[in-house]
Length: 149
Image 1: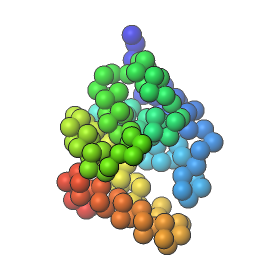
Image 2: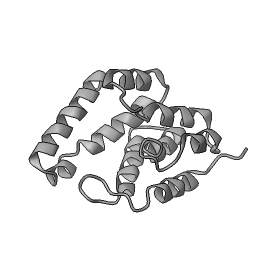
Image 3: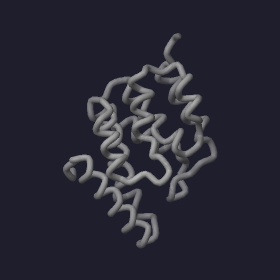
């Protein structure tokens, strides 16, 4: 099976999240692009960049687990996307353990957290939401052993 090209993965992700917005009301694809660029800038490879584009697709019900299982992606890309997909009711510690146990997933999650915690992005949110999210992201960084930076 021929693997999806980077441009095809991006197109699938953009189409899957079409019409969705982030908490600040921005098009969701902007977040995906920022995470993919963050992975590239951190030295990530094409499999990790593909996973960055798709990292929220199953969790947000934009794509199904069956789509992921059958997609023309490498097993490593599929494993990273699966690792980054939170399960309903899952404790943060369990989620972090799965990320740490999946080769390549930590770099993608690091980029995701960096964009989510961007002060400019958080600044437009109500204070209570900003505080809650900042605490959530700080806790996840600690569980993953990522230093602030």
